[in-house]
Length: 157
Image 1 (cartoon, helix red, strand yellow):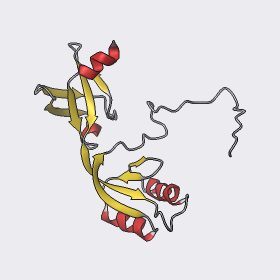
Image 2 (cartoon, rainbow, N blue to C red):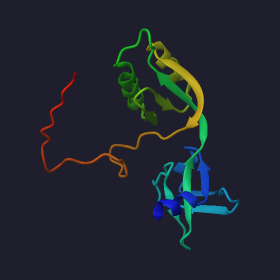
Image 3 (cartoon, rainbow, N blue to C red):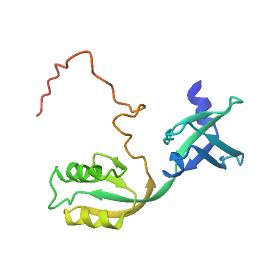
Image 4 (tube, rainbow, N blue to C red):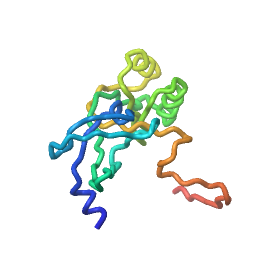
């Protein structure tokens, strides 16, 4: 039942910059004025659901925005190209979205050139942008292991 209610809820589409503001005004998908007041430091993510003081639901959607899509060269690249790029961008505290086949970041011509000099392919695209949450932020879908060891074994064929 909850999934059906959430699926029918009006939406508001916001880019990454807007989703970081603690105060925001906008229009919902049904044309209602929306005023969001969030605790300082709270970041909205695409898929978040807000509940108004009146009990109405509002789904947050990530807007397409101009981003740089960084991929490894299919001919000359190595499996370490993207992790190496993520390391260098992280060292500069650049918000990045990490996917298995690519990285996304907001446009920056200096960093774009650095990545190209590293042999990576950099393309401008219009996509939703969901950068990684900080390691100390809550709300990731990772689980914490502080009370036991893992005896995992993996067989590779």
